[in-house]
Each structure stands twice: as C-alpha cells, then as structure tokens.
Image 1 (cartoon, rainbow, N blue to C red):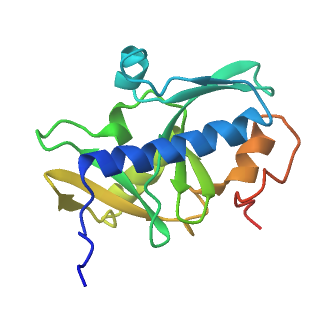
Image 2: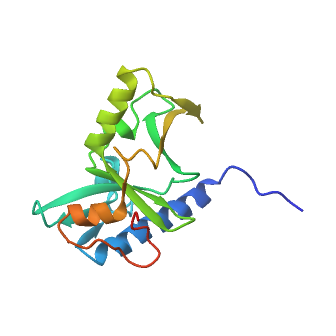
Length: 176
C-alpha cells in the first residue's frame, strides 16, 4: 500500500482553497449579495489587497471585504505573520475586513475580523505568549477555534451583517 504524501501539491492546494471559496459564496448568497472576486486574472487588484469576496452588510449599508482561508484542520487555523522574504504576512497587510476560515473536511465555516486578529496578535506579542513557527520560509501562528475572543461561528457573522438568521444552510456549522 502506498502512503499519501503529507504535503499537498500546488494544484491540490488550489482545489481545496477553491472548494472553500465556493462553499462560503454559496452560503452567503442565501442571505445577502456577494461579489465573487476569486478569479485572480480578472480581479488581480482585489486579490493583491487580500480579499476574495465582498458581501453586503445590511446593518452598516456597506460592502464588507473578506478573504477566504480553507485552512482549518485539527481544531485550529493558521495565520501568516511573515513571508519567506521577510515582508509582513497577510495578517498585517490584508485590507480585508474579515477572514472567513473553512474546515472543508467537515463543511464548517468560522470567521474573525482583521481588527480583532491584529489586537489578538498584539496582546499575545506584548505578554510574550505569541508562538510562531517556520513553515516553508513563512512564519505562522496557529489560532485554535476555541479562542472565542477571536474566532466566531458562521451564524454569528450572518447575524452581525443584519440578516437576523441564526441558522445557516445545511451542512454548515451554526456554532451550536
């Protein structure tokens, strides 16, 4: 028997990321307008600013920007602190309002605001509890889904954008 490679190929990573983006877009379209900006060739400017979608927030009457990360695994999500070249990672450079993270294996969606993420990282850094590690030249940190001061369930996002719906579509974690 052949063992599966531990590391995904670039094409496999793209497919996983795309599946997460499609899930988020599909679920959000059930409750609000969504602009799909995931096609890099057509939306290079938006992609370089760090977001994949924009969705209408009924509370603020504005379009919020979100970057979709299909990187939830083992109860945690990864956050990029620096790039291999030493430049700041997306945690500091993204102009997205939210990160929507997906556990594609279980069709679960979570989210956090970029403002809250940056405050969380600064608090961890100031009290010397930020744990970073290097992976393929990137410096990353893991944030566990039970970090409830930061990570919120999908249903919370839906409620916060003024839809008044507490249960998302089938197969998507409502946080209950």
